[in-house]
Image (cartoon, rainbow, N blue to C red):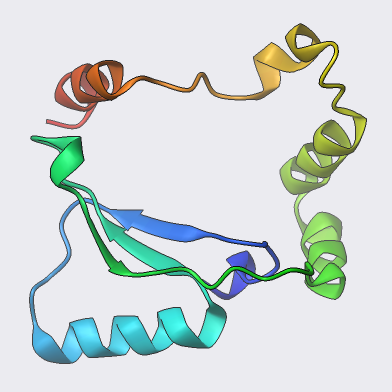
Length: 116
């Protein structure tokens, strides 16, 4: 979670979260400490997924963490370059660098084919 604390808003998404009160409490404390939300994904019906802990939206990014991650992770450094160079007037230029946004139906099909 701490590596995601640089973002304006972020979520940890998990399919099967252990329903142990002590575990859930510890997970929520981590969520609150780092501002990262937690979503339990229902792979049978995505619309029934639950936000267990909302993310805290931050106006300003933590650039010291961004810099540290970029120095340690070449994929993250490339991601930063891509979003810096992104041009809304030419979205096709970067199609290969981003995942397709799936509709709810497409996501349900994907989950059934890949996860189940």
